[in-house]
Amino acid sequence: MGEPDKRAHRAGRSEMTMLKPEEQQERKESVPPFQIHILSYRLDKTYYCTVDNVDPGAVIARAEGATREEAEAKAVAKAKERIRQTRILSGENH
Amino acid sequence: MSKGYAHPWMLVSTEWADERKNDPNIRIVEVDVDTKAYDEAHIPGAVGWNWRTQLCDTLRRDLIPKAELEQLLGDSGIDNATTIVLYGDNDNWFACWAFWQLKIYAHADVRIIDGGRKKWLAEGRLVSRDIPTLQNKTYRSNEPEFSFRAFLGNVSAAINKKKKWALVDVRSPDEFTGKIPSPPGLPETCQRGGHIPGAFNIPWDKNCNEDGTFKSAAELKLLYEQHGVTPDKNVVAYCRIGERSSLTWFALKYLLGYKNVKNYDGSWAEWGNLINAPIAQGEAK
Image (cartoon, rainbow over all chains, first blue to last red; front, top):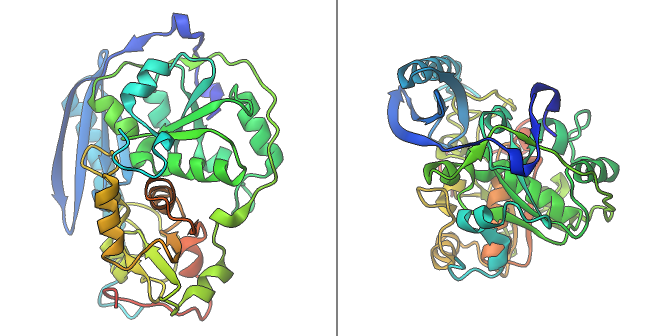
């Protein structure tokens, strides 16, 4: 199932480590001419951030960090780089 | 929970899934296009499926063949009597693809978690990074039955036959009009921008509320019927690669109860690369 070799710990249901997602925050930013949606939350001691492209809403970057700022900065930088590669056809003879 | 749906049992709430996540007759599966999401954390006990490598034929552009499906399900601790409960990243797009594929192979009981991964996390429900230990089972599948799947020939035949057919393009308005060839930040999969002539643009997210749950049947009925997408027609939903349109297919088929709905998984990645195929640009006409 989904690259099991990368996943070290196999567990029966009774011995699973449970974590509670906390401190979820989200906001939108403009990356002209598009927008991105930034969502971050904490699991245990790690912050996770995903960035989607709002319309249609596909996740385009993901990162983690010891602080929210670190996770968001890494994910947003990746997302901006990917957005910059988007080709806009309007005005072209396509 | 039913919100007036035609087949309300196909959709389960996060609360329902949470209460039954340890039920041995139920297998919860997270379906992701990027399995880093599953690795980050998932519903305790959930299996992770990688859409790119486990649900698609990695050589041909196709569904996985019957033998691979049987292996995947058996290895996931699923037999023919198991209730499969799906959720995933990107607002359940790929979970709905898996649902569509499982219905093509006629699995009896498969359901979607309303709101998916996004709602589970937003509600602060417990997650785990541990991979469940699974007992392999034997799964015997039917041959695939393609009445839910549109092929290129079906779509070509539907153009300009608006009395009997409705083509629903579920991509964003910028993709539909031809402004961009692919969603912002995602790889291009076609050489042209635009849409199939005669298609209506009803983006996938119009099916959903802000929290990712599906809108009520009354709201969905209004949405589709105002565009002329009515239950008496043969409806074909498409997007770029067929995953967003599988969500719309699910909504039309199981929430509204439309009889004749197909998902065109060839979608714009196929049509937009065809030689000499008719393409429309700009707003819908």
